[in-house]
Length: 209
Image: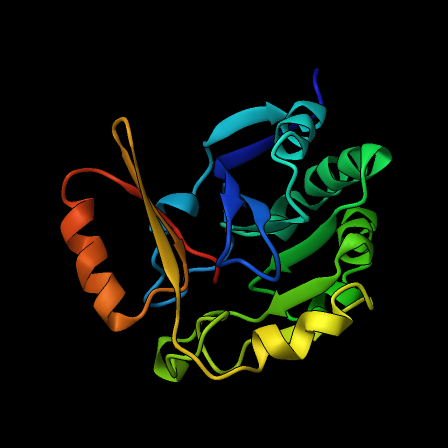
């Protein structure tokens, strides 16, 4: 059987998922049931099966600085996600940002080799479950309990200018054949636009669990 990862979808290039131009993919499946979740269709099983090396090659072909993984819950398929990144890094230097509903402490004490492998490969981790009552409108994470954690020094030179500069939430809305995709953490105004667009058929690609 092929080494596969099940994802909702991917984008080759985006500017709202971390420093520099990035590629991104959204893992299918999530063990959480956060109130206010914007992508409930990513909770269950299903998605599209990709060979890990084939997905790595597809993302590499975009020539972006790095990859962001969200979902769904990336650590629900930690081993496969880690193999995608390892395959990319065999051929080129790429950074990694991961959005997860788990806390860093939960992942660190999980005692699972696949979880440890993905965590070790991560440069920036945005952790914690989304809480609608703590959604303060700040960019790059969904609610104030979530943290943006540097796990390596890769992005030290741009971290403060990117994550700590005041500003609103930014999103990208892409139209394709039979598909409308929103990438980013949406503001209330962006959500209204999205709901109108979604009525014609679309998939929400949010970055916060």
